[in-house]
Image 1: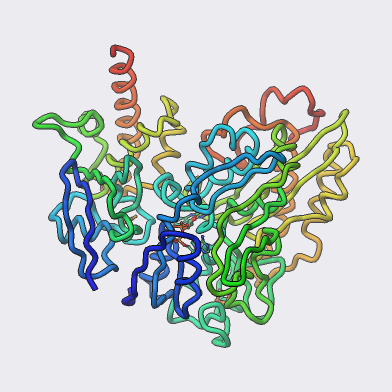
Image 2 (image 1 turned 135 degrees about the vertical axis):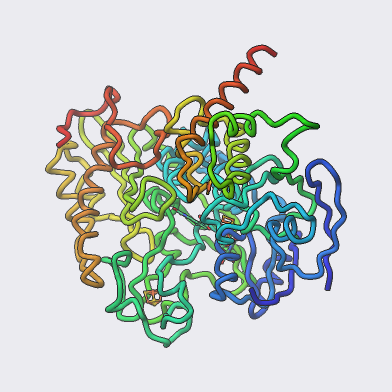
Amino acid sequence: MNRFEYVRAGSVAEAVAAGAAPGAAYLAAGTNLLDLMKGGLATPATLVDVTRIPGLSAIESLPDGSTRIGALVRNSDLAHDPGFAARYPAVAEALLAGASAQLRNAATTAGNLMQRTRCPYFYDPASACNKREAGAGCAAIGGATRLHAVLGFSASCIAVHPSDLCVPLAALGAEVEIEGPAGSRTVSLTAFHRLPGDAPERDTVLEPGELIVAVRLPPEAAGFAAHARYLKVRERTSYAFALVSAAAMLRLDGGRIAEARLALGGLALKPWRAEAAERLLAGRAPDAAAFREAAEAALEGARPSGEATAFKIELARRIAVRALERALAGTPERVPALPASPFSAPLANPLPSSGAIAHA
Amino acid sequence: MSFPITLTVNGSAREILLDDPRVTLLDLLRERLDLTGSKKGCDRGQCGACTVLVDGRRVNSCLALAVSLDGAEVVTIEGLASGGELHPVQAAFLAHDGFQCGFCTPGQIMSAVGLLREGHAGDDPERVREGMSGNLCRCGAYQGITEAVLAAQGATARREDAA
Ligand SMILES: Cc1cc2nc3c(=O)[nH]c(=O)nc-3n(C[C@H](O)[C@H](O)[C@H](O)COP(=O)(O)OP(=O)(O)OC[C@H]3O[C@@H](n4cnc5c(N)ncnc54)[C@H](O)[C@@H]3O)c2cc1C
Ligand code: SF4
Ligand code: FES
Ligand code: FES
């Protein structure tokens, strides 16, 4: 780890002032940043500790029906907040499917959004990586690509964003509240992470000194609570990043889909909201044909970034279908013992509002 | 620059002068406070051998900067037993062979204590296994670990019923 100055910010204004200095980085729990620093992949000159800033640790229900999650709310506190989990069950399930209990007890909401890719070449200082060093080249291209992108990648970077939390948040239309040297602004989560293009060294639209203060879920996001699931395919049962994941939510009305939400993880350098699929589902009867069409639409334009990634495309379609089926069957009363497992049995007794669908 | 911090470690208040902000909680415990029960397996948040309680919650001490935890209350494996009496989770690990070489064991036990406090797993073995998935055991003592956690959960529940 490089030497650095340590500054403890007592307010948002103090953090922004210190964070705008060249080489400064915000420190929340440190579960990603310290890991990167130990590997020599991040070498901040100053760490601005934001964990003592008052007012950023609350989950607030606002009068207009929206919910505001403070940047410092710990992943486990968010997942286990009874009111929050009841309104946004897929978010709770995604949180509990990520990392380990110890990491979730520490990790913050903003830190989760800001975590960097798990591309193994990014993690290996001996490999060329455009994300680590602009213009250095990309060792993943033509390398071992099993974990890489099938959507939104470029000739300079084929990595994916590893967050589980971001996937249901994107589906629900979450917005990121930002404070910076130039004032406050709000950015939709789907526009927050940058696709690599020719500048993969920039993960997000944040400018130097900009601080995430909260993530806001709009009023309509609570309308999907009865039919909301997150599914995550991993290479082992637990404590592994997603190969492919899907957040699916339905609002049903008289046996038809009034409104659907679908977002996919593990496929691109950002959570991938599938708005074309959502449009296609609106007004349809929730049946196997509709779900398959939606999955096709969600993966429109997908192509392998390397031979070994090709499997992700059909896998993602199937996981999208399965997530929609599970959402249709109804949100379980409690997050399952194995959160987000695509292998657990669907609910034996679907909620009365759901239509029948055959499970192959 | 040096950083004076205060930590309560296993019940006693410690004034610590850090000469370098890079010190993790794990290195502070092991190298400076001579509490070597917490182990350094991976130093990267992947194995759980360094698990301790900070303000009552289990965390990976290898991925936390000590300077950032100023004022916190830390409990390590050394602080679990009271007098000569083992903590119920420690006793359950002995009774159920929850280890072989013992390297992961302090982390497993601290994690189990954290899990029981969180109270989400109950007596469901699947929830216990999932809740303990942040602790790897190279000896593969998982069967005994799960039994030990379930037994400790049962003992705690019985104590609470009696109270
Ligand atoms: C072994 C392991 C397994 C994991 N598995 C998963 C998984 O399965 N799914 C998953 O989603 N995640 C997983 N994670 C990642 C974990 O979720 C992140 O490390 C965590 O969410 C980061 O939060 P933090 O508070 O520790 O952030 P930090 O490490 O403190 O910071 C991370 C980044 O965010 C920036 N930052 C922090 N706060 C702010 C703010 N308020 N405004 C602007 N920038 C800010 C920091 O500067 C830094 O760049 C895993 C991590 C580990 C170590
Ligand atoms: S895919 Fe992106 S992160 Fe991975 S080596 Fe290439 S440039 Fe770096
Ligand atoms: S040493 Fe901390 S998780 Fe492995
Ligand atoms: S007992 Fe040997 S690593 Fe777990």
